[in-house]
Length: 164
Image (cartoon, rainbow, N blue to C red; front, side, top):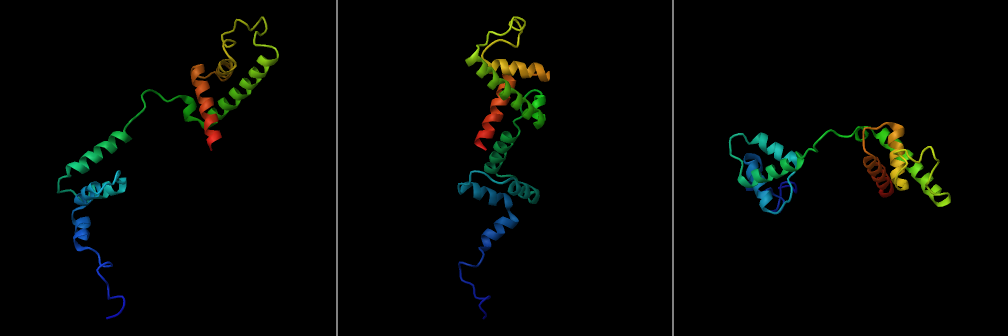
């Protein structure tokens, strides 16, 4: 015998495991879940479902598939904001908001935020500097959002930049 033909018990494939994977893929998934695997890959589940058209799906595998589907099918209600669809618009909102907020913060320290007589009564000239900056951006870009949404979008973009 040659070296390639001499195989010890450790190197020989387990025939029962081979048969389980090839002939009964659902049982293999069930066994894998029983061994403590938290999550089966989508490829494993798909190939087992395709290969297994006759045999019923075991309850443990079925429960796992149900939880996976429940996780992936969570759809946010309502129409997504127009800014979320367009990354350039998000960048524009972020830069305008930060620029105006910095200017208003500096102005508050130097002169206060009382403002000129002509703009004191304007709806966008109310609140602290961050709120005013959001209202100014909203008015300038004519967005179909609230000033709170503009502020939240700008701060979340800022947070992403700091962590990246």
